[in-house]
Amino acid sequence: MTPFLIYGLAAVAIFALGLFTVVVRPHLLRKLLALNVMGSAVFLLLVATAHRNREQMPDPVPHAMVLTGIVVAVSVTAFALLLMRRIHALTGSVVLSDEDDET
Amino acid sequence: MRERLLPWAGAGLATLLAGALAAAVISLPPDARGLAGAAGERLAETEVGNPVTAVLLAFRAYDTALEVGVLLLAAIAIFALRGSHELAGVRRLPPGGVVLRWMVRLLVPLLVLAGGYLLWRGTHAPGGAFQAGALWGAAGVLLRVAGDAGLAGARGWPLRLGLSVGIIAFGLAALLPGTPPLGYPPGWSGMAIVAIEAGVTASVAASLAVFFTAAEARTNE
Image (cartoon, rainbow over all chains, first blue to last red; front, side, top):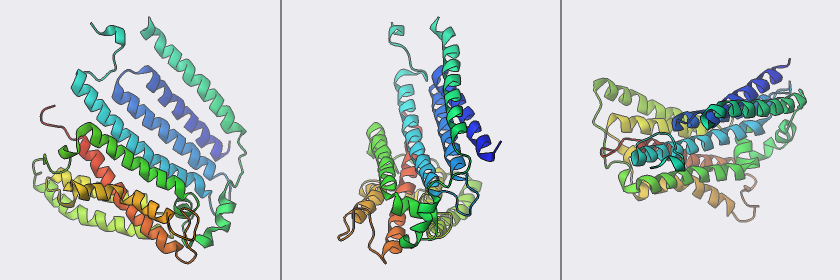
């Protein structure tokens, strides 16, 4: 059980847990937090693949990809939070309603 | 009926995906250099010592340029939702208490200094534009929370200039004559990288301050 396998399988498990929450839970903020958790799982997997070799320099390309990914995740989270506030201001609820629920 | 099936469907989907991904992870070779060899060979050309910075700003500069573009796009989208006249200085938070003001007085200069140091260190050690930009963005958020925004209360064209200086720096680097797009002239590579990183740091800090400002509660909400 190499360290890469431990980190990689942990990342897969965290990704699956985040996906479950995004699909199942109706609260918008929980969905957004679960999306962030899925993003963190992907970053963990990327950094784990960068450290597979035993030589001096770990692979720098996945590190750069993780940095890029963090910035993009922050931007998406900020915009999604603003959308959530607008939905709450316009409809008064924090869950998305179905079309046939409206009366 | 659908509400009762949804958790099982979600669990089934997540389990299937986890199984497929685990099989993929297990099938990866446990000892692989990846691109470390290729990056190490060409590191001396970029005149920076930190391989991650070299990858970000020299080998994969296109990705970093688009990433700064995504930051600007998110800021534009936030302006579109909130209205740019509502940001930054129109509605100031009430000034904080004594503890908050003293903490801001102590922390903001340290944050600015640490950010500048990380920006310079990024050329030969872990650090760089995004880390420094995060520290400066935190300083901007602290200033807004404390009530006296100063530079963090910019609006109008200074705010827009601060947000876009990162992508402008990349645009100028792409238009340098005599080199391929986003390539640097030999001998100038180190200075070009530091200059672009400075622009990206300012953009990241301004974008983070805009993101925080947009989430402030409005009085009529």
